[in-house]
Length: 126
Image (cartoon, rainbow, N blue to C red; front, top):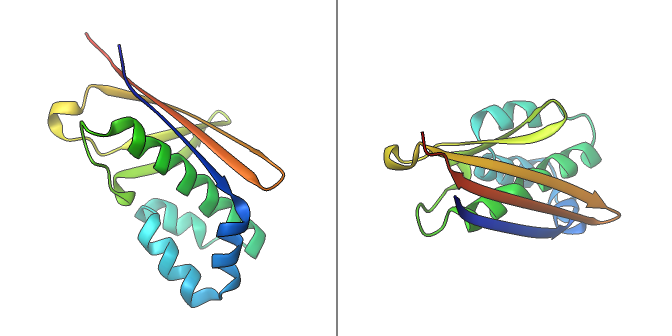
């Protein structure tokens, strides 16, 4: 049974503007939005363009996940970690114990200056 659906669309220019403000501002933003695992990977990005793309993907899917989970759980930035599994986005969510049975499905796409993320949360009944 589907519990929630969330979508978010983001102009990559918004994230590029953050990165252009300089490393201090970018690092502060990254620490706020990224989980510890994501933050470590973010720091290995070599260019500002890679940093902006990395941040945009995570911002977009985390926003979509927040929308899909609400009101069952109000997710925070660090509650969600985005990784890739066989070329597809995978969201690991720190659910409240009563919601640990929920499964998360995510899709991310980008074209030109836009990034869009979809998240579907379903109840897995055993």
